[in-house]
Image (cartoon, rainbow, N blue to C red; front, side, top):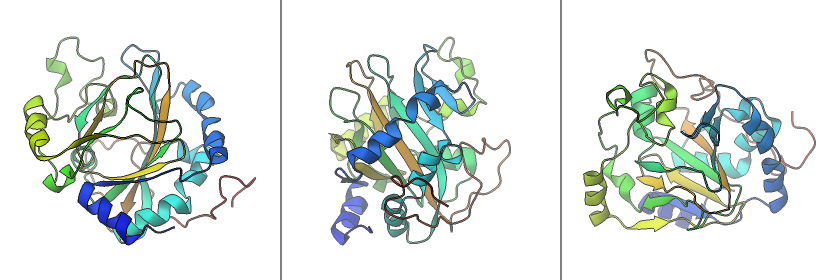
Length: 280
């Protein structure tokens, strides 16, 4: 279940690698069956779209939900992450992003690592994201856009958006962790930056079937438009960090369900972990 050398080369050169239909439809349906209950929970782990009704994301479900706990320890995710990062890993962040039919909002152009460096004290971008497609993703339902190879720019310094200075732009306080997850991202790239980057790097739209998995670099520039189609598209993103890249202590740390402080390395489960009745 380690990646091939060709896949590793693709990841290093492009900033991502797509593994088609990596999980079975049965495994995907087991995960999707958990979503209604998770989305219905009125907890601080849930982020709504700005209209206040539609679920945008849910965080930390791997600590409370058995199916997603197993997914976070699944060898098809953990072993490639170890291969990419060259060490044992732990779960840094776990989230379910839901871009609902007709109402799923935009994710602005951004890099992930700047959030983790600025907010959490993460020392280096020695992390990788494993995105599991629970639905088909295509050009109709708010596909991910990547700038191929843009991770080679390293972290691009941007000024944090000050929500308090923008009348009516967001209900989220600047001090809230949710300012990193609304449609108006705290560290988004401006139009001039995107225009300049687009001259250097090709923009691609990711298309994938349910069960596919996308590993991508924390510094790749990416975004997604709003979903005006009648087709939902949900993904699970498990972010793995190297155990050699523990964040430093910061003032006002974000919640544990958002940024794990359990640094113990993952021991991968068996390959049929999602299908068996119980896992120790």
